[in-house]
Image 1 (cartoon, protein in one colour):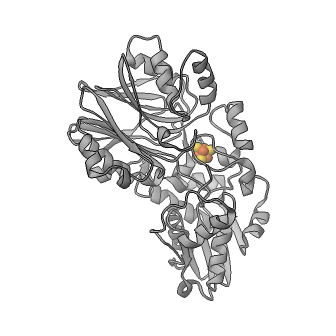
Image 2 (cartoon, rainbow, N blue to C red; image 1 turned 90 degrees about the vertical axis):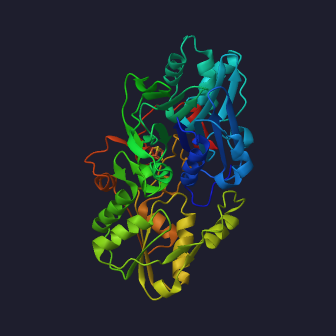
Image 3 (cartoon, rainbow, N blue to C red; image 1 turned 90 degrees about the horizontal axis):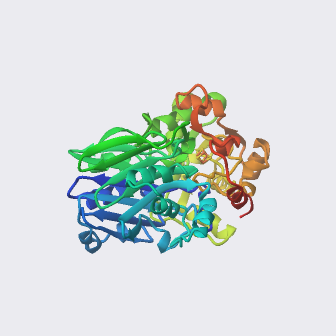
Length: 467
Ligand code: SF4
């Protein structure tokens, strides 16, 4: 799988409904609002209380769920998924939800995150006779559940979840139940809401707003929520939990109108911009943000410094996602097609360009060039994340260690490589301050600091260091 031009790729998004006659339609709208989390494939599985039926395909939500496809999806419970392939690659068979039928009944799974011991478990399961339908890590859970010796499904699920390591927000649906599980570190966001008497679950709260659902609370690390005709119950499947939510969700991945653990993403980004104004006070004429995810931070920087915010860069929203780029040249051409500098805004000006991250450096170099070609006299780059020095093992495609420009270059070397007049990354402490935190407890900072909240299995390490 070749990387998308932005360098940092989204993970996946999940959405579920229980107890609503329009479950599939609500899921469609929910997935639509989570489309930024994955554009490679999408699916919905619906339950009418007796059977599970699914529609899935490679493409965008609006492309896969045609009017005819939606007519098939009748029932009062549904789960859906938008996919960016982080483990196991792309392909139709890896598009979720995965649907399994057995003598004991049917089971559908939707997963956001990445398991770090999936291969280890797969070896064990295959040795015991399991045959995997997909190359995705998600399927491991279905095999563990079906092989579990416990009589009750709830205990089979709890026992199986306790064997998984890494990041997982799971929706598990049978004919009569919806189960919602979050890993013991709560690495990925997952929220619970309601719509009348129905329950709704989503990776981001922006999906609740779209379907008119009310936010109830975030799912807790190590929690298994079970929703069925008797109502909702909550259990723990992990004895010890240490919260470590992904900080990149705030910096880049989530939508600005989502709230994660009570913190609005736009506000967090704006605070990061304000913090950067303290850490990198620059004499300049205009501030501009790289659309879309850096605009909030750019507004914060402009507000704090008094330098006017301008639309110095415009994104062509109709280019589509250039997620398969066969060469460096074409990747750079992709950037050119996607972004334009506004000459009337930047010509003859000293520009502060705010971006959320630098991964390989290629994109930043192109954008600095665009601004200079459009007549900017100086381009000062400020970045609302600390340098990304390490890969992510939890479902964010940050590239391999050797591809990360900050893994072996210092700030001055990166500045030189991207052709900027100055370069500042937010500090880890500054980023935490922007999130309203004193220390780093409760957050994953693995890609910045190299301190990961879970152990990393050797084959996973090898994949990210040598692929
Ligand atoms: S390593 Fe980085 S991208 Fe991955 S979960 Fe942790 S903070 Fe997020």
